[in-house]
Image 1 (cartoon, rainbow over the protein chains, first blue to last red):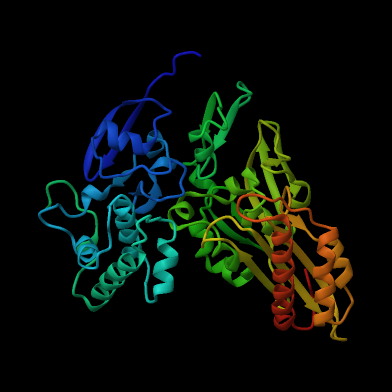
Image 2 (image 1 turned 135 degrees about the vertical axis):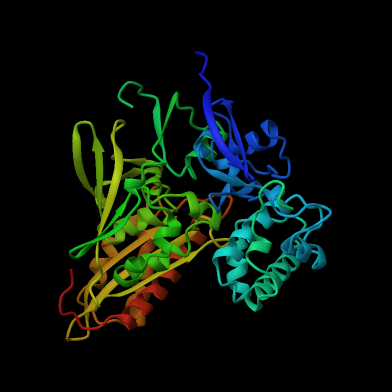
Amino acid sequence: MSEIEKVTLWVVVNGVVHEGKVDPRLLLSDYLRIHLGLTGTHVGCEHGVCGSCTVLVDGASTRSCLMLAIQANGLEISTVESLGSPEKLNPLQKAFNEHHGLQCGFCTPGMLMTATEMLQKYPLKTDEEIRELLSGNLCRCTGYQGIVDAVRECAHKRDTGEISIQDISPRIEGSL
Amino acid sequence: MQSNENAKVIAGGQSLMPMLNFRVVQPALLVDIGKLVELDYIKEVNDRIVIGALTRHTTVGSSQLIKDYIPVMHEALKYVAHLAIRNKGTIGGSLSHADPAAEYPMLSLLLDAEIYCESTKGERVIPASNFFAGSLSTALDDDEILTKISFPKLAQCTGWAFEEFAQRNGDFALAAVGVLLSKNSENKIQKVKLAAMGVGETALRLNEIEQLLISKPYSDDLCEAAAHSLSSILTPNTDLHASANYRLHLTGELLKKTLKLAWNMASVETSYE
């Protein structure tokens, strides 16, 4: 097999511009984890079923294991690292913590990124709607009730104005 | 694609990428058409709705045009995959991939869609009834891409229903049935279209059942007979998720349910199609 030429990738990840040469075959999930060291994005099933690797691409939740890094050329990526920090959790992360919305934590980055898009775009008036939208993310510790509780509380606080969309949106580097 | 016969087109990638990850397919060249924004549209053209091949499931699912004119598609889209997959997956990709348990191939058969394909040789239109050759196999030539799909609007008097059973919301269907139906002034079934998915090598139009129902007055017995005759028409697979018999049983139950819903919704035909 002939040598495959590398391709030039220009991408904004969590507000920081990254430019470089990558294999055209490289998955976005591997680019984030291996090339950028952003290991908050977890890789579970590697075929789009489990949802652990979910990131936001131009604001839309996306499986980073089902996208080539080069397909993200020119786009804006947000990973779980763009939410709060261990010292300062964002309101969604705080709600996960308070409602025991995680046990082992493997699915949590994907859950958080999916929930971030949900809170930005959907009314989330019923548990049915919350569960439907979260149904693409698997939690094998079966902690769904806590996760739904956390998202419901955030949606409620969003609606009452207790927290703003800004508070639960990805932050760019250095803005924390 | 003309220069490399082992080339593959990628759009949303939500079916192809898992196959690449598993090395089930190993194309030498991948042609990414994902950024052809001119193929991302939903248009009203007289009595039809035309959808560009790169229109995402999220876009179709939230389209007011689809909700108004092809409500059965709006309903069926609720069953298509999960949020992140819907954000990326495209209608053209779903049809080209031709999974026997995916919603778009079934909807295209139910609605008698016209599928537009293009290559450097020009454009051709393939009726949905001739498009699906087998599981994951279509009438597309190696150097062709699907560009748009044209669906007729439903007539106001048409009753419709779509019901699906899957193990988890958004997963591939174990079975699903879609129905379009109109009634005449004698309160009989005037026209009926039926399609099923998850129960064959491709999604299927159930022509034999349509023939059995046409010009008859609706009754529970008629639906029961229709469901009963499925066993002589369908040959579903047994796999990890469900046995052939269970799939057949599900299809029968979904058929009865959808026929009832569609009949109750239909009004007397003034003009159908």
